Length: 344
Image (tube, rainbow, N blue to C red):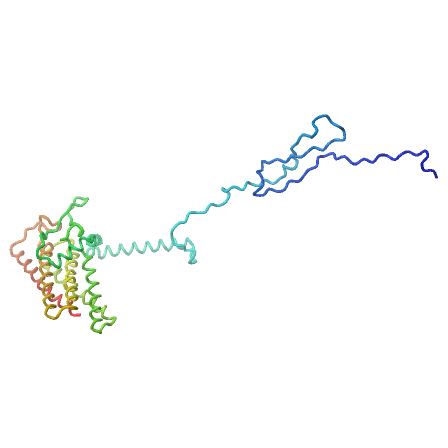
């Protein structure tokens, strides 16, 4: 067979020409990727026919793929939860208690405290006035030094009258202790009683007879003396018809100043002999007696012209003599009270 004669040449092979532009898939957005407004561009494939124009085809945006891209919000700082400032308080969650239970417990506790304060005010408010306690604990360092000097050396002190001021409501009231050295306070008596208990225990230790019960016995003896002195003066004021709104707290304060002399007597017994110790005891007894004579005068014999709590009735000469005799009897009783306290 002759293959070359009278036959036609085979047709030219042509590669298929793409009719759609080639799409390059875009990678998903990441925190470091550009903003969603970034646009991808692709080149239009050339056609088999030569076209007039620039050598390179003009870029064209392909919206077919971008409209199906997931819209991921930009990674902004505002999307992250901001740290809350530290709030002081008890972390109840650390103890296994949720906030609701803790709040309920706090409310119940506050209600119980308020009910207790109301009960104390209703039942003991007439005897133990809270405002009066605050008034008598209103002291300063200068007042404490001046008051101790007055208790130990009362012989040359002038004047002994307490000072009066006007309150915001226009009522007359005593100056607080920090402003008036003649005003009684409860700070020095309380500290003196505590110091007396410690000095008594120290004295027992020096004599090799200290036991734990010594502290209790000293405290019981100290409060018993204060109770006896207070009862004697309070009953005396009752029978003598002495009326005062702050009478009870003032008497307790004056009953506690004797412990200053008792402490000095006990300390003197550590270094002095029997004779000098007796002289020291007698001196502090006289000093305490003289101090009470002048100080308790504002309680037993109040001056109506300056005392905010004194009555307006004029005392008869007989009533005045009875009250002065009662003051001297109270001063003499101090030797008995102080003698009981120094026997440790």
